[in-house]
Image (cartoon, rainbow, N blue to C red; front, side):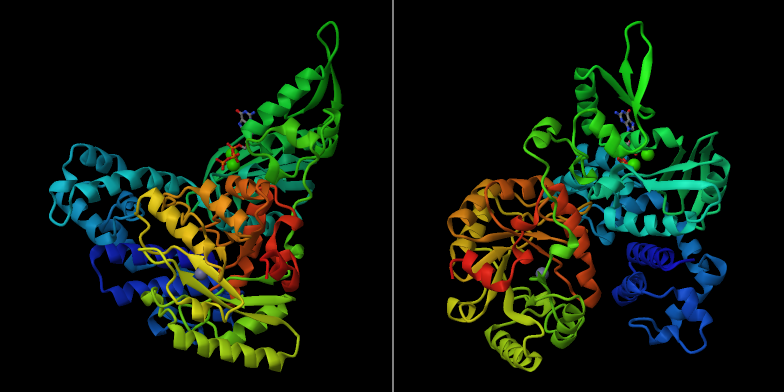
Length: 576
Ligand code: DGT
Ligand code: CA
Ligand code: CA
Ligand code: ZN
């Protein structure tokens, strides 16, 4: 069992316990352990094999959890978990994912209404039976109804970041298979879509059997769904499907183009082929001759395929539903890469809800080769995260001044803050404090259910404040978990433009907020976009790559992004 699998078991255990009404400390212990294990660079099984290491030395892993890890590694299952799963139907777990419906309410619904599936729950809401339950009401019922669709898709679609880790394990497993020449992952994964439905693998091989045999030996396999001469589908333990197709070398480029999609992109490309008197499918590009015969024109590489249609090669991230001809005519943008990023401008330390100290965060940023970082802990309104009041903030800024001096130009630490925009409007800390900082972020964390006008006004008010530089995660959506709050982004963009302010693309794989269309809209209006990790520990810096993927999908170049520039230039852009 690998770390991701162990973490998934602990998460499931936490869900089931929570549903049962178990002690919240116990539940949290499992969740923390899951997070720790997912973030490890070393496999749990290797630590167990290594006499010089102890699992209990890991953060949040006590004796009991260490034993459970050992059982999982050795047996692949956990008796306690099996017990719970027998008692609570799997379908109930989907209910826990509904925004606004915690485990306690889910348990009431399950017990009182004998409801175990999302469909049954939807019907019960429509029949207005849910509002009759104790502690429920018409409003809760509506919230549940709104959340059911979100929860239903969440069951079927995996975060890109999770898919990416899986793809890396698959790549490792499938490398060096005898006779396999080329191997690539296609589909929505290759396009970098926020969530991935299933994984599509394409190979060329002397004999198709070796690749399929090897896939059948993947440690996370649950079942082989189907296996033919050149195609195989499997289901993994996490319920995800993986499709493998073996194609001839002369069709590899055409197949890669076809199976990368998106469907909408392919429909447009097919139309362009037609205009050229050509036909395109997963086998190649063909010229239609008089008399009905077809001549193979291209198909070996993707570049050949696009070239045959007089098109430039499209980076996969630009293959969503966008105007192919218009993009090609205006010249494809030179998309931003991770290497273009020179600093990270949104992160937390252990002064609030981060895990690492200021010094540790800065050290990790130096190791990444950044020119600068902005330390942006929460402000006091976020009491759950131990947000900073003016005194504690000024104290932190003093420490930053000191550290800057000590580091003597190795990196520049910016005195920042993620300042809450209050429910009634206005900033959480006074201007006399904010004006002493370098980089103040504004965020909406509370009052997310307010009407559109009110939330928009709050953000506009923040951007008009001369001390604010940028609005973080501007829509508040959590992919698969929570819809965006109601906000008029058009007005927000307009205001940012007029006041020389920026908008954030939050790189957290659950946020990726702004989405790709909104990123592109900001770019079109000339509003610089800051791509930030929102790191809560040193590993948190690593999510930058997900933000970059999203930025590429939005067509962003190096020039469109704030933190590809030196701090001096950023200050000028802010009109300082
Ligand atoms: P997913 O898996 O739901 O995240 O999304 P995709 O885009 O990976 O979709 P998938 O796995 O069903 O198929 C992979 C690609 O294959 C898809 O993006 C385009 C191509 N494809 C599949 N079926 C069709 C089809 O019926 N027509 C066309 N034009 N393309 C198709
Ligand atoms: Ca797919
Ligand atoms: Ca597929
Ligand atoms: Zn933050």
